[in-house]
Image (cartoon, rainbow, N blue to C red; front, side):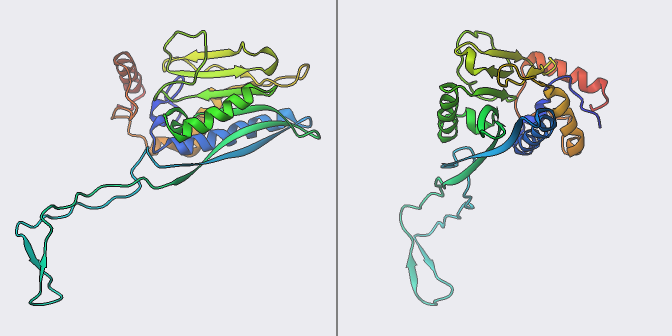
Amino acid sequence: MAYPFPGMNPYLEDPELWPGVHGRLIVAIADYLSPQLRPKYFVAIEERIYQTTGDDKLLVGIPDVIVQNSQTAINPKIPNIAIATPAVQPKTVTVPIPEIVKERYLEVRKVGAKEVVTVIEILSPKNKRTGEGRNAYEIKRQRVLGSSTHLVEIDLLRVVEAMLVFGDVTQNDYRILVSRGENRPQSDLYAFNLQDVIPSFALPLRTGDSEPLVDLQSLLAGIYERASYDLVIDYSQEPVSRLSEENVVWADALLRKKGLR
């Protein structure tokens, strides 16, 4: 089935689907850029690794215990021996389990010198939620912004607070930040909403080099079709990440027009 939305598909923001979308989009961007950048540049897929306590999900599940009414119970394996039951029954709780998180991102490197020219990040929920994930990403972000390396930061998630920039007071659903090393602190922010087409942007490279246009909309639509996401998305239901009232009405009309509701 063809991609049904003119811009970002809010159903792809589902936490169950997003890790796959993120991974496929990283590879799609790399595959798209590599032939256009050779032989001067090389596109590398890198990983950032950190440990979190798993605050986004419960990693341990223990079924509820049945509380006995009597103050004593009999152990069936040891006849005629009474086992005292504590007066206060324990509660079933969960404990934070350390979890190793791996996040992929892209580096555009200059061949020969191995210089990192541009970093491309696609944000995930852990990057935006308060905790170890956001801390790890913000440290990396500040390191890049304090260098001569260009930063492209793609935020296709409406959840939680967006990354800090100054000079933008609008409330938009999605953002693409293109920060050129030679122009900082000024940077280009492409802010757009659910009903908008995802804007294309020029990939920043070294001065004088031809910069390819990244058509993120086409890349996302291609991923949707190749991965057959239409088979696992139920468009008769509202997306997990809630829409505004205006967007609920708009999305309903769009999906009905396409025969998905």
